[in-house]
Length: 293
Image 1: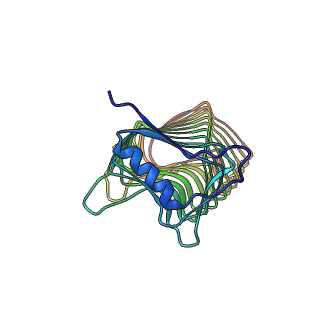
Image 2: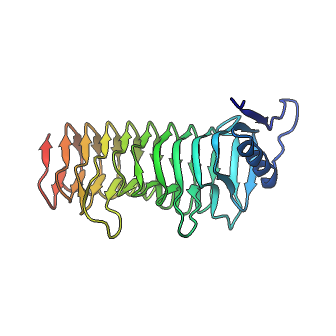
Image 3: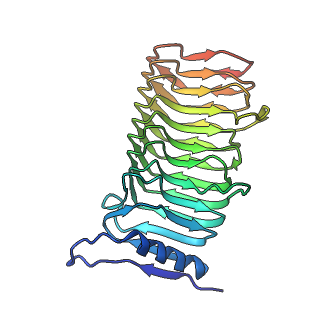
C-alpha cells in the first residue's frame, strides 16, 4: 500500500512569517497528487493567490493551515476562485485556513462537456470572508459525502454555500454564518442535511429551490436544529417545484419576512420555535404539507 507523502511547509517559531508564492504551494499540491496522496501544511502568513490553487484528480489529499486564523489565502484584486476542485477527487480534506476575498473561495473548475465527480470531501474549521459571490460554490459537480463543518462564513456578498442538482447525501453542520445575502442554498440537491448551524443577519437563512428546467423531484433534504436569527427576508424559503423537504426543530427569531415560507409540495414542518417574525411564522403559499407545530 502506497504510503502517504507528507509535505510540510513549516516555519519555526523563531523565524519571521514569510508569505509563500502561489506557484510553490501549487507545486507541493501537485507533488502530493502525483504521489497518490499526501498532506500539505501551509504556515501562518498571508499568501496571495492570483490564478487559483488547483486540486485535480486528487485522492487522499489533505491541505491544512497551521493556524486557522493566521494562515490566510488572500485573493489578488482580479482573482476569481482561491481554490478549485476538478476531475475525480476522493478523500480530500481542506482544513484550518482563512479564505479572504475573491469572487469565490472554494469552487469547482467547470470544463465544457465534463462533470466533476467528488466524493468524501471535507471542508472543516475554516474561515471564509468577503467573497464577492459565494464562499463554497458547487453548482454542477456530482458529489457524494461532502461535509462542511465547524466553519465561519461572514460578509459574503452572495450565498455562503451553494449546492447544485447533482449533489446528494452531503452535510452542512455546526457552522457560523453571518451577514451574507443567503446562508445556505440547495438548488435541486437531494438528501442533504443542514443542521446545528447558527445563521444570523443574512438576507435569507436557508433557501431550497429547484434546478433550472428540471421537473419536480423528491429531494428529501433536512433542515434541523438550526438557530436562524435576524433574517432580512424569510428565514427559511422553500420554492416551487420542490418536494418532500423537512424543517425540524429549528429556532427562528426576528426575521423581517416569514419564519418559514412554503411553496412546492409535501414538505414536513415539525417542532420549530418561531418568534418575532415580521410576516407569518409559517406561510403556506402553495401545495399541501405536513405541519405540526
